[in-house]
Length: 359
Image (cartoon, rainbow, N blue to C red):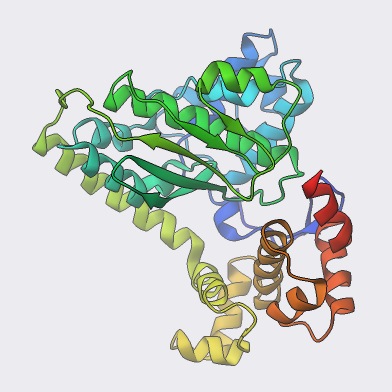
């Protein structure tokens, strides 16, 4: 699917732009296949789920098929519309056994130690087109804590955000049990949205305390004595790692120069340089940088707005900063300009968004 700079509509009806990495077909279709299979249990035809994606069911079984986040997003929207099961994401995630991930999964299975497998997963998770990124938040002698963040759906009030988190947690639990052992379990799950009507499904699947309305999503698990890794094999692991390295390079290239700019802006919130300063940092001429961004279907202005939106949502949900303080942190001259921008992004003013997040 070709990249486009046309605005898209988010769930609040406001315009939203997507980066080229959202449009590029570079990921295996395993998550889409899991969702389609789960909906088939409800007698929902695959064609109905795949409507608008330019995919057919037979392609989901082919190792040559590659999909984009745009197509994943469309499937999630269709699933939420068609299903009678509000816990569809949790159940679809349970289908994600480690072998569904191709070479990434075999690299996990053949890792020499659990620590090696964990480090591998952290480095290469992007190659599988995950719903969420994850990172270690804290580690003690007794337990580890992880934070997970949806890659493309930052608003906790968006149903796709909840879907992404549920699918990611369920899939992670399933795949980890496959390569670590069935005794693996979460000791606590944290979620940044209110408890849904089907909260008992969380209890069934995770069998641990589940806390809603938290500042971030994540989970904890206690260190334990897991079985010896019977499938560890250095040759298989080296081969699978090499292939994952190639895939990771392709994913990184898909982000293009837009990813580099996004990283620079996130690293220095509120001190947003001009495009000329960005070009100098990237050792490019400003005109060449603009042309490159145009070729990737975006612009410096779009990237800056995306970064500001993500940070604004974080500040409103996780801090007590006033609108004036957030405006200053995001580089706006006053709170009014920040409010107008936030309305464009989300369809809500900052105060209403914060109050809704706390309910």
